[in-house]
Structure formats: structure tokens, C-alpha cells
Length: 287
Image 1 (tube, helix red, strand yellow):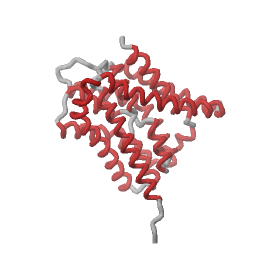
Image 2 (cartoon, rainbow, N blue to C red; image 1 turned 90 degrees about the vertical axis):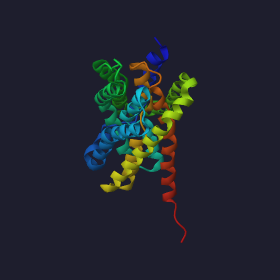
Image 3 (tube, rainbow, N blue to C red; image 1 turned 180 degrees about the vertical axis):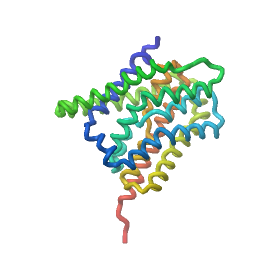
Image 4 (spheres, rainbow, N blue to C red; image 1 turned 180 degrees about the horizontal axis):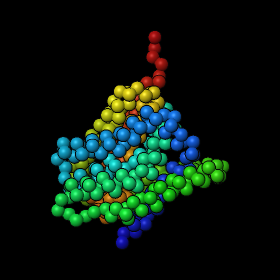
């Protein structure tokens, strides 16, 4: 048993999700009612648009096998804690961002196993590899949903303690995320460059297309500017830690972790560009 993938990775993800829960309140979920149009669009882009774009990108590049599955895994993962930070830095609707991240994370208990299993059967036709449905649902629930709910409950009952813990856990979660991404790359260091050459362009195109399509749809239905940025960031920034854990821990396949690791690095850059564009757009023009 690989202690890193079987023990450290699930614990690290649970800590990251607990950190997200510490920043949640039940009032955050009121965004579903207060901003139904933007919220519904965010869910649509996350659960429908993103996986469809991933499949289109995979087909365009002619990818097959484990790397194709790895791209589908990252596409079906929910938005990550990072998206909330980027939303704040860009002046987006943070409350909406938190609500979308929380709901998609809770819903991933069902959506992730279903689409990942479809991907395994579709791209690994001769393989008997499968994500055990009940085991994966239970595992994702224990590692993601329970920590989020626990953090939320602590924040509701002990907000002062929660605020102190959030400062610690938020920094810890960032550190763990970085360690996990680079650990995945280090594990496949001999093959990383070849894999990067094969799938790097695909993951980057997926990331950019996701942001552009969500931007177009948000503008199409005329949601406020701050909510447009929220939807773009929520759909472009995924929970790379969860993607890596699914591949490494549940499927015991290191190759499938690579697209998630690459995407995680790329989304920092593209998310940063969204922040930069937002800052530049706010600057007053000279008369």
C-alpha cells in the first residue's frame, strides 16, 4: 500500500475541505434563492458544459487511454477553494463563489463516480478498471462532504474559534495543495515531459475554453459583472487535489494524475490573468 496515496492524500484533501467549511455559513446558501439565474448558470457550466468541452478537446487532440480519463476526471471535479480566493482578489461576487463551490463539492459525491466510470469504460475499452460506485461515493463523502459540513457547523456554533482556525487551515490548505501537485509530478518525473507534450495543450485549451464559454453564457443571460467573473473563475478553477486523489487513491493510477496536476498549474496562470484584467478594467482612463 502506498502510504502517500492511501493515507496522506485523503487526509490532506479532508483538511483542505475542512478549511473551506470554516469559511461557510448557512447564509451562504441563500445565494441559491437570491441569485438563482447566476447560480443555475454556474451549475450548468460546471456539470454540463465542462465535461462536454473536455470530451470535445480529447477528441480534437485524439487522446486515448489513461491521459484521456485523467482529463475527464479534472473536468468533473467541483470548483476548489482557490476559486474563492481568486473571486475575492478579482472583485467578483464572493458569496456566490462560495455557494457554488460548496454545492458542487457536495454534489460531486454523485457526479464524479458516474462520469469517471463512464470515462473508464469509454477510453479504456479493454480494461476492467472501474471506480467502485458505493466505495467511491462513500469515500468522497467522507473525505470532502463531512469535512465541509463539520467546518460549517463549527463556524455556526463557534465563530470566534472558527475564525482563528480558518487563518491557520487556509494557509495549511494552500501548502498541502502545492505539495500534492508537485508530488504527483515528481512521482511521474521520468514521463512528465512526454505527458506534458501530449496532454498539456489539451488541458490548457480546456481551461481557456471553459472560461470563454462560461463568459459568453454569463454575458448572454445578462448577469451582473461581478457574477460574470465569479462564474468564469468557478468553472475555470477546479479542485485539482480531488482529481489527483481519485486517480492515485481510488484508481491507483499515477498516469491519470498528470492531467490534474498540469491543469492545476495552468489554472493559477489563467486565473491570475482574470484578476489582472479585472484590475486593469477598473483603472480610470485619461480624458
